[in-house]
Length: 190
Image (tube, rainbow, N blue to C red):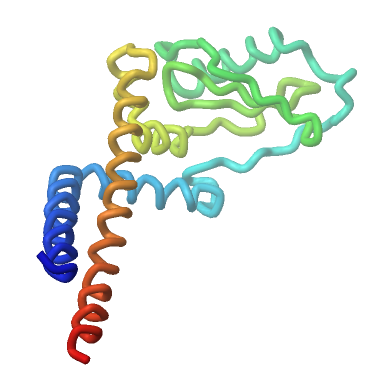
């Protein structure tokens, strides 16, 4: 078998792999593309996907209230403003000394509260849409839904990452091999 036929045969093999992966995972790639697009724009969504960080009255840490006092204020605000049935469990506390603000991000739902760290005043109550989109994007939403600790996310991101890598590799050869075949045909024509 000459070189041109070998290249054509491997190109058909690459096309088959490329088509197979793309066909099976089309919906997932579309979903990841859309959520990735939204995540890329989250800081430019005028606060819809990601709220801006508000400023408190003092950046002096000595004037700040204790975290347990601020937590009590945040939970009360959450229950008064959204629903008493929401869990007060905190996923993280973002302290922003340069802004005089503390943000409580809750673990079991997509709500957060920004408080003035020195007086506990509510600066902003936010729906964490970007966190929800990120959890959809990386598959961790299913882990949360099923109470699993990261196995679905790990499997999903591994499959999608390896598939994207394979599509890139096979796509390159689908682009490059016809150029090689044309070059070889020109060489043999002389």
